[in-house]
Structures are given as C-alpha cells and as structure tokens.
Length: 90
Image (cartoon, rainbow, N blue to C red; front, side, top):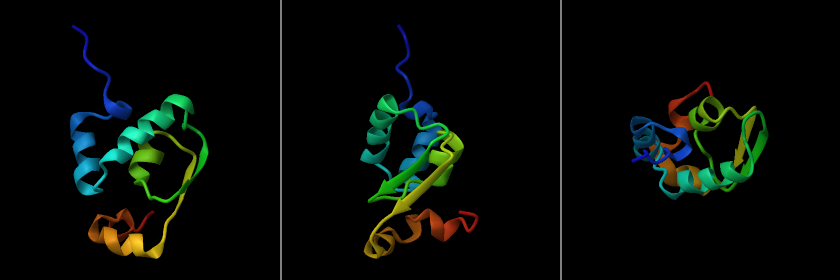
C-alpha cells in the first residue's frame, strides 16, 4: 500500500495551519492543479482575486514573488484571517 501524495507537499500540520489560520478551503486544491500545469518555483506570479499567504507561495512553493490584488471589501471580509494584519514583514 502506498501513501497518497500530500496536497502541495504540505504536512498535515501545515495543511491544517493554512486551512485554519488563513481560512483556505478550495484554494489549496486549485493551487495544486495549477502547480501540476505550471511549476511555480522561481516565477513572479500575479494573483487576481485573492491573497494567498506568503508563507505558502514564497516560502513553501518557492515563488520569486507573488503579487495579489483584491477588492477592498475582501480585506474587510477576511478581518483577522488576513495575513497582512498579522505579518508586518509582508
């Protein structure tokens, strides 16, 4: 019996962290599909309509840069789940 591959190579603890702390649900599955078609490592990415955590796309996936644009109302909707309220380095 072989173990199933982990989503985006994330451990269960990492997966739980991104799902709970950043309120990511379907996002990770779509990112997995994207990663299957385009290796994101080393790329400069523009994400329209979202804001994935830097710790996921830069630190874990190895993107060179990740620029996200979203409507101001989305920032208010995310509230404390928005990474930029917690991580001033980003």
